Image (cartoon, rainbow, N blue to C red):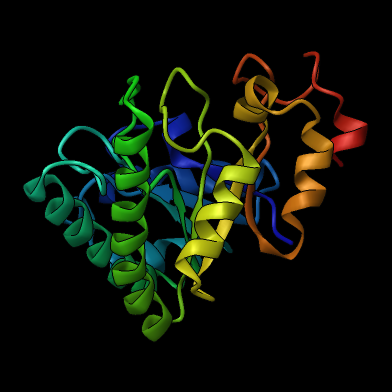
Length: 227
């Protein structure tokens, strides 16, 4: 297990120029960097990898940015845009040496709506079909995709560990795992520690954030139980 830091904490978008952050990351004791790659044109992956290596770091994961226009349950054009983006992310991961792509790949962040159960089931099947497509590509490239449940104010689609596990079962790909985040679990899970245990071997990535989305500690999350 590596301890890493996400570039979203310091800059957006991450570009080649953002690699000046790397010496501080290493000085602070981190081994790994989670790069938030908002568009493939923002970086030269080979340059970024060389800067990571120069500072004794690795890119442990890539964090996807799934805003408006990238939505696996959206319009046809939104689905295609998201599929294309994820394919580019998987390619970039290969160059950077990252083995995991993380985030709420299933839907645009901020899309939270009430829909009839029949429409919800149709959306679920659509997302599962689209995830199967990207997982086939991820399998070929040796990359794991870790689905992140978000809180109800950021999505209405996958909010809990159990829902993410259900999607993983429905997709049925060895390239699919779960990404848990203590900030979101603090809102959605009755027992965050139990949710982590429930994820078990399918837990592919973990974000440790305070209950206020800040630095862990001095908040009300029960960190000894989480650990």
